[in-house]
Amino acid sequence: MDEDILISLPQITTFRVLEYDNRYATTEHVPASHELLYVLDGKITLHLKEQLIFYAVPGDFLIVEAGTPHRDEFALLKGLRIMLLQFKWKNRDFFKTVNNLSLSGLSYDVRNEARRRLDFLRSNWEDSPEGLEHAAVQLHGILHLFYFDLQKKQSVRERSSFVPLREAVQRAKHFIDQNYAEPLSLKQIAGYVGISPAYLSRMFHHEYGVSFSAYLTARRLEISRELLLTTHLQVAEIAVRCGFSSSSYFIKVFSEHFHTTPGNYAGRTSAPG
Picture 1: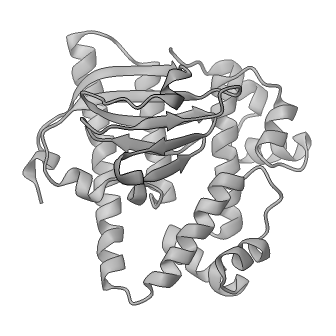
Picture 2: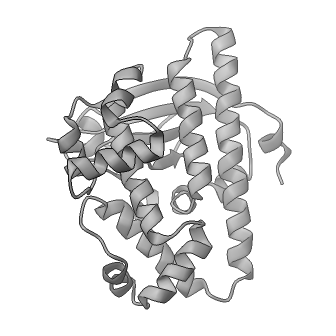
């Protein structure tokens, strides 16, 4: 493995919360630095070279290597809000393991920990030499989390003889990520990917470490949390946008998970940018 991944710190060139300008949706651009994107609000379709297309919703990560032509497509009327980290980093192997195809398979624990570290960066950002060095350490930790989690999954897949089934489970996860606001069921998604509900349930838990229903609820909570932090939407509207059957049920589930109500959570937390 490339020792640079273990030792050298990335050099952060940009860190900000960004409301995307419409030109990014229509014009191809080439970044001078690597880009790590964390979606806060809106949906993005990332168009890369060789007709590669990747989708992301609130709570998702995307990554673009320096010098890669790409276009960030999103609904112009709805807009797009992301957390953007641009950085320089000498490495040879990192992007072979961590790319937009593999990032969709991040484990739930790693995704949550990376999000927690980004929140820490956001609330403690300081544009000074000491602040940039501290931020570089935090980013390095996030990149480590991604690399080792995805490298482990890659090794398991290479040894597995059930690749088509794993692909079906990944399709199921992608379907949840894109349709979390709808009233989804295990039976519905199992039919969509073409395997039985019972088998999908077992395989989903094996692949991601949580049950189908737990992942769906966690995904909805993750997105609701971002909306509370980054928008002025009412709790009832956030409940609808995130697929909860009622605002009272949303408040109950949110309170059980985060140990505070949505209103209190939004009121006591702020985001820079």
